[in-house]
Image 1: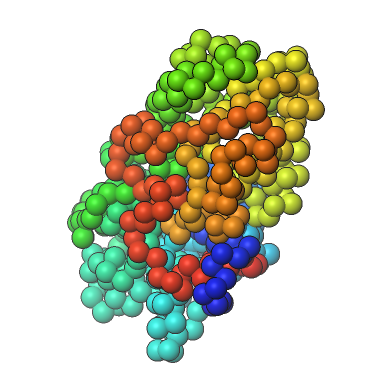
Image 2: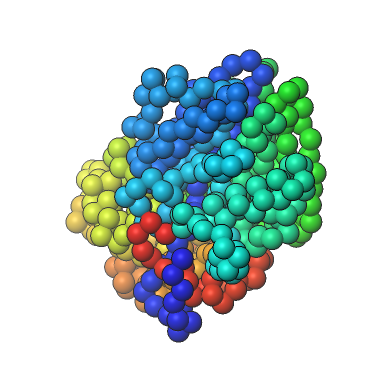
Length: 485
């Protein structure tokens, strides 16, 4: 990983993150490849750059990786070739997409054949990597996962104990992470960071168990949801008798990522026993009350509430109920275009919006619109959407964000760029309004997030309060370059 000068922290360079979807399945009687495949399809929203599946059968490793969407990466023949009753899968999302398969997970240790997939970001990655390289360790990738796998396998070789090896990982790593892994002829395991920043759930079915980033996977496969993994918890499911063992190490103050509820997770998911859909409805209620107090409906003679599809729909619908306004789908999404928020460059995001959304002229023309979106990150997408509506004949546009102003970088696995690229970090709300060509911009408050989600949250990107300290070289070294992290 390249180190850059400390004075570059407020440059135009971007943070490299590792927001992904992970899944692990163990079965007593049947191959798991098809279940892993459908799990990754369900988790596609968490990563569109690449995907991979690794299975193990009789100490033989089988894997398939591709820099593509899940549906375009696996054939029926591939799935038949992924033998074994235990396996893990991964969908990758980075701020950039590497052209090769080097950084595509899951990773496998050549010596022990332990396999691992990872979601999150390790904030002391640079320090740990430098220290290990001084000891002679050679890293073949630029991914946190390779470093985590090395730490785990080295301790496992000494102890032959999954919990002691996992404790070594927990004691060594700082940051946010959920991990799934396989130990050949032993079983399936998971590790979650001590604050529970990144999500992880466990479910079961007749013949086995599943570990996943989101509960929607368990629902899709018609399995039974058990619970969320606890912060600092290690779960081990033995291959011999499909028996679960768990242990919690160093669980600290919970700080669950608020952006999972606001944007990233699917609305069907439950995170920490709080419905994503209901949290978004609750944000709509609170925003509706705020707009009432500010009398914006009367000021701009609002005719209709329009959501930016898809994640803002539930918030917009509830907001329309509170304000007693019509709710209409004024923007139609092209289902074959990925999430513009997680596209790797500004150029891709702008062109992505251009072909992703189309206005319904009959809903928009000559109307005063309350436009609702989940968040404003860089402002470029929001500006483009407002232009689409203006071009379609909209008169007044009040832009509503269900997320408070995003002012600070995320170092825990969400693509929140350096401060110079976050519009709310450098502009006042009136300046954001003028930049986006809106009549008004309305944000929710941090207290609204807490009231709506009702969980202990990480709000670092909106409050600047980081639950895990960020080493200075981590702040300085999150750069945008091909293939990193």
